[in-house]
Length: 125
Length: 227
Image: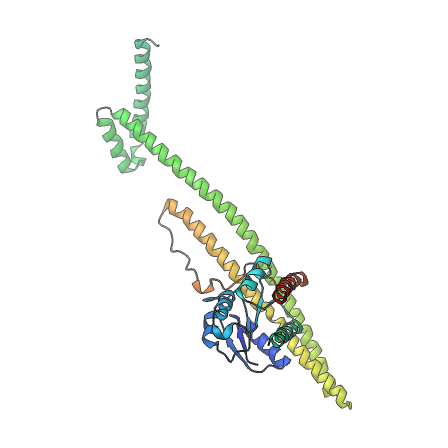
């Protein structure tokens, strides 16, 4: 399972990459904004973890672009963000995000969300 | 209707007063701006000069009053916006300071526990393999926890980004007031790379309630999809 981790904060990317490694996912690529992430996105990506607030292209725009890509219609997208307003969460749902974690988070929450999303993908397959 | 003699008398008296005022202005002419004095002399020398002078003074008064109103409005706007923004910035800075302290304390606690575990592992006491594995796993968990506490850096960076944006807004507002008096100073160069990179409501406070709202919305969506 190859992860694509998108966040403009190097610290956050390292924290997420470290958490993924501890969960057991060692294959991952990183991008610092949506635009850069689109350049890395292809059929080999099995899971996307993205922030919302990023320069150049936000996580929301990135999610919409992925959903518009033939390879990206079913790839799970987990948004990890500080934006907790109800309307933001609804906007994320409408953009095609599959689940949502509010920062600051614990590694156990991240693991739980990833497990659930992968289980739902397997169930749908 | 007043008798013509009375009107004439009043007009003459008024003109004498104006003449007296002009005389006074002339004597303090050294203090007057040269252009203003020329304008005054020119106005008086013209046929109907006094009427022209009064119109000029009225125009000057209207313009001055307009400027004063604009300054008052600008000051009022700057004051309202300034107080509001300063309060926001103050709150944000307090949050950054407290989050930094809290994260530092958590990190130090985690490191202290890690040091204790390492000392136990290093002690000349025979440990069972099970105990050793358990302690090594604890060290790993503690260090991972330390790393996780560093999330505060991303969140406080967003809070500081918001403060920078508020300062930029205040600078622009002050510049608007400055333009009433003189050429504005060079505008604060806004860092466009920051655009969209921060959440103005970012907080380091973990909130189970906020996460619960997100979970509920996604659960409803999942139910609808399966239905």
